[in-house]
Every structure is written in structure tokens, then in C-alpha cells.
Image 1 (tube, rainbow, N blue to C red):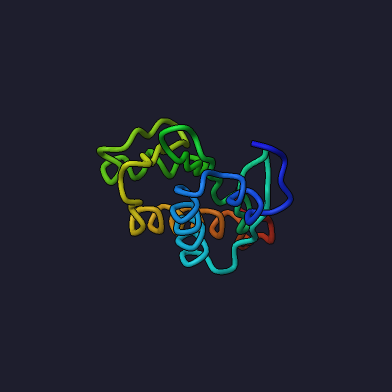
Image 2 (cartoon, rainbow, N blue to C red):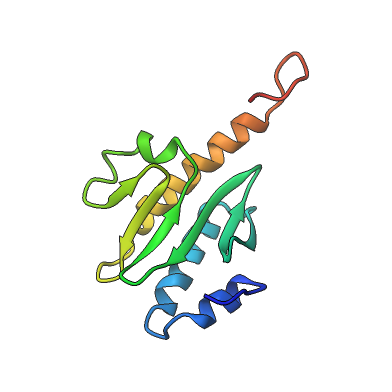
Length: 127
């Protein structure tokens, strides 16, 4: 993948048959957390909301969804049937995107980020 300045450019560089799926994933993330900031980081789409929220990247046969730990471990049962290791979930290109599951995971990460960003009673930040 060539260096890109925006998620639009990233998607435009991918094969035409995959672009609708990447747009669907992007929309699902932004619907789950409308206040997320979208940018490119490590040459892939990145979303930030009170810290790291989620990345995605197109591979040959799947889309990798990177959600900082411990979200994958906490939702291991929901992810049965998907290759999920540490903070990475492979979403096969020959299957429909599990939009409800993706949104559940992204919302869980957003909640974790918010919790860590909330000041404690002593005025310090949790974390």
C-alpha cells in the first residue's frame, strides 16, 4: 500500500471489488462512535477516541481489524468462527462483514477509553 493522506485515498487504492466492504466497515466504526477522529497511522485507517480506538487494513484474503487489548479477549465467545489473536481479528473477504459485532467491539473499546480518561476523585486520571 502506498502512503496516503486520508482514509478516502486508502480505500481508493484498494481493488474496486473490495472498496464497498471497506466503506461499510468505515461507516460501521463511525456509526458506533460518531465522535471518533479518523486519520492514517502506520499506513492504515486509524480511529481515535480518548486514545486508540481501532485500525483496519486490507490483506490478500481478509480485512484485519486491530482493536487494542483486552477487547478481543473479553469478547472471545462472540468471535468464535473468526481468526482472532491478541488485538487482531481477521474478517474474511468471502463473508459478509459482521457489522453488529464490529460495532459492539468498537463501542466496548470506546467505553474502556472513556473510563480510563475520566478523572478520579483525587483529581488524577484513571490509568
